[in-house]
Image 1 (tube, chains in turn purple, orange):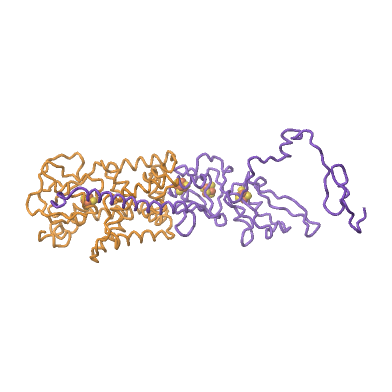
Image 2 (cartoon, chains in turn red, cyan):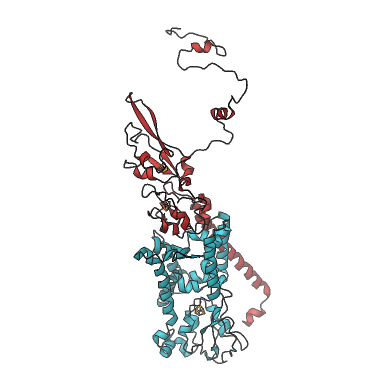
Length: 273
Length: 302
Ligand code: SF4
Ligand code: SF4
Ligand code: SF4
Ligand code: SF4
């Protein structure tokens, strides 16, 4: 004791400084490790869908406390909490896999009502407004309807039938005289409930619900669709536009001789003009 | 050292008060840990949904919301203002622990406590070296790091690795590989650092310790004059440094253990043969003569 008291203060101060530096170093290592885990956790697997009303993933990870109350109040046992090293979603967060148990789109949305934190936002008051994902017909080469048969199952089971999925009739080029009723998803109405994926009769579903970030493209901010603009305006968008003649493909290029076109410099042998 | 300190821990107390008397709070504590775990397991095991959720957040009898305030603090720092239910739940939990001692959570509720206690028991059985003993301030650095990472990444950072909720959620909802974290904590306490996890690392304990700094329920070395220097309380206490000021204080000083680090486990009360310790409240100001000046030994405090 006394030896320590009589020692000059410098080594002590140095020790305090080294200790602080060491602690700060350890703290930085713990922090970096933890930050790495936290950032990795954002990689939500494509088949893991969040419950209705879930905030965007980055906000969700800062809000959901992983209490599982949404899981408990789901009457269809759709939801479960991700298990470490098994499910891929951030450990302890609620998710569902459409092909296993889809969301039944309860009218009273019990999962949202149960959430104490707002990670499933109470702003979702109509289940039809939920956007858990978007269905995509991922495999036209195996979808029975796309092959020209009448399976129609995904269309029939859709809780938002005729809005979220429609059957679009088109000509069956293969047979030459049948129709194809193409299941067509409309993202503005699809809730991502997963009923269609669950019900697809194929061993591996041809229609799958993907997280919106994977399912959808995005038009550039400045893109305008001429025909929509025209409809909105009720007149051509640009005044005084010159209507150029249309060119046709193939060797019969006589139409190009019209005003604004050009005369071919040579004539192809064997082609009657 | 006195002759008595060569005896096995608590031997004297068992002789004085009987085995039950010398394990009273230990038994109560284990019962409490089992009780709180069972409450959550009644639903999944027996379909009796009195309590839903887990330690991070729960709903009891469909009316009482409880939320872990530490989890909510991280969420807040991550930039989210939680909904009213979660806030109410956290306020209730915080108020209760601020009253009865924050680290009551550690010793009476936390499911990791039996794990680290088991590690400590085995550690003593195998007579292992105490290993790495971090500085007293380490837990505050870890705590600060966790809050910082939460704020920087916008996530509830500790919940990705928190062995407390991993274990509890594992038991109530399903483990996956979460048991790895539990085994890691056990091994850490067994071979890397004696009493390392709960006393030096776990930011949950640190949070509750800070929360309970001014708690009302406190252990008091009320009859410190009778202390016979057997050192058993220091041997069983998970945070032995908290005992010294109370037990070794002079006549005028308070016999209350006022450090927020004390877990109110009551084990010191159990193992003390002359019954020096008792549960008291913070405002207890009965005069307490200091320990008699005989047999003074230097107490090794790590
Ligand atoms: S809407 Fe109903 S079925 Fe879908 S996740 Fe919520 S509680 Fe479950
Ligand atoms: S109820 Fe809310 S906070 Fe709890 S696990 Fe579900 S989404 Fe997360
Ligand atoms: S996921 Fe499928 S079934 Fe559900 S709304 Fe969308 S298209 Fe309909
Ligand atoms: S002082 Fe007593 S009650 Fe407090 S932690 Fe130590 S043994 Fe437990």
